[in-house]
Length: 534
Image (cartoon, rainbow, N blue to C red):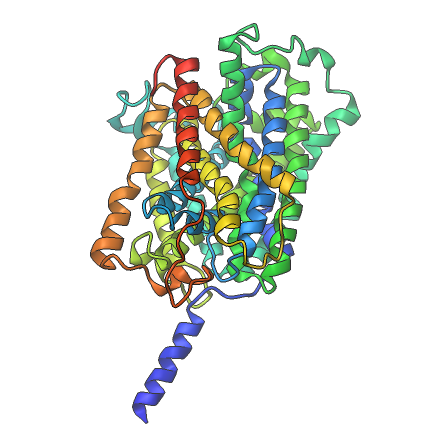
């Protein structure tokens, strides 16, 4: 009798300690509503790099992201029992062809998403400190240098300063919110979202109404290099490359498929309406920023590193004094909304990767609220280390290498799933013409990776490749040492296997052909625009 009670108790505990189906698409929309704030991370850096065409970098990028989202919506519908977002669904397509390519999809997605915590919290910390102290204050200039990393990138170092300390405190506060589970997070972000998105809405609209957008600030329509030659196109493509890291990010709305009450309907609605929100934000905010500042203003101190962006945006909406401080506070909330969005999505990627046997087993534990706490602690610890790096734009640029690798693999997984799982019912089927655009954009992103990465530093592409390669020993240890070469039963869930065995791949050599073309575009573009393969 005691054995039966023990088994029932064990079963009850297992049922409680897992992700919970507690949200609708509206909740996921508000969790993803932090994405528009990501424009604040690099709007200054892209403007200072590209010049007057910088607004177009954002528009082109977010349109790319919108078409890609429909591919993700289809493949997410195939896996209502999995969490972790598009990378998990993409890995399921590649696993029939290569055990190593599949975890690369998931790993590259996490490496792309998790630095949002670092960049977002550090920019928010900069806004807070700039409001409290004058620019010459010792607290803003003092630092403790730990290691010089000049061999990777000139001026890069590991250091501790006021920004890294305040940013760490902000991350801990975000962690406390996430600890309550996705439903509690969604409810709080609904409230914060209404408030925090207000300044972005004002910034994107008010300057047009007040006549502060000057047409002269859009001319000459040429990159800062002065002409649309190879150097000019290099800058422009570098701008689109970096914008992708922010403007594609609303794909996080499909991270919560496992927690939707009705995943068949909620998945598409979540990503569609999140995409509509981002189309507006990433089009009008950069356009207003460009039209207000002009080329001279975009190259002013504080724009490139982002520290002066908040002050500029306050002036854009006519704020000053106490009103200006309120606007800055709202921008900080918007940034923290983005940080919270990232922590929710990236931690679930780690969690599902662990459950499916790609990543270390310890990451698969959740708390009594259904929050993947060990994955969240891993996210937090990794980003506390990243906060000590002196160049957040370099962190972002390296992260984006990983992101575009993930984008390529997952867009190709759309057609791979159609071949290997043609018989499986799809709650949402992407129109064929949009699927074709999405697949083509995978190769466009490979080209952007090669052309744009090293614009942000000579060692960017190499550093990104090294970061991606870390998954090899991580997966090898988990799969071959811990799991003895056998995937957990959970990995096969929703893969429509027969007797627990994956069916044979049906796409032949085409997936490998797509990989070969992608690699050719990456290294060919890097050689053409930068004069070397790496």
